Amino acid sequence: MKVRRIWAIVLRQFYLHRRSPSRILDLFYWPTVDLLLWGFVTIYLETSTVRLPEFVSFFLGALILWNILLRAQQGISVSFLEDVWARNLVNLLVSPLSIVEYIVALEW
Image 1 (cartoon, rainbow, N blue to C red):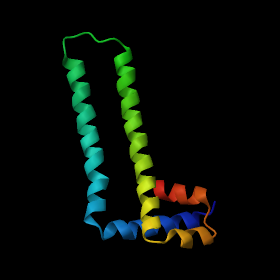
Image 2 (tube, rainbow, N blue to C red):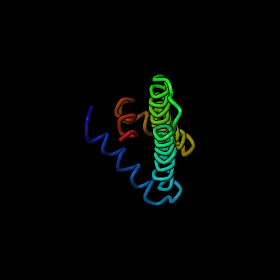
Image 3 (cartoon, one colour):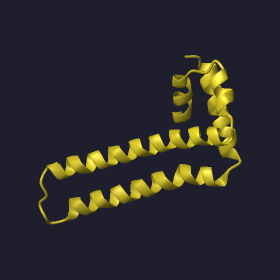
């Protein structure tokens, strides 16, 4: 893995996000909504007088982890699809960039 190749894709994504308000909104809107939603659910369950079984906390933790993984997968998929729609995928595939470097750069 070459850091220069990863940095090139990160820089490319930065330039794409810099000119697109909808992409910038997605970066901040969904994490804020998720944080508020699960934060309020947690506060409600802590202050409720009903005694809940212990598996409920494990279930909530699994839901939060699932949501984090879903957002990461969605970010990679949307970036990949944008490359396909812009007909730029062929350019990336003929470059010496590996799939691992591409995925690492999209998640960074």
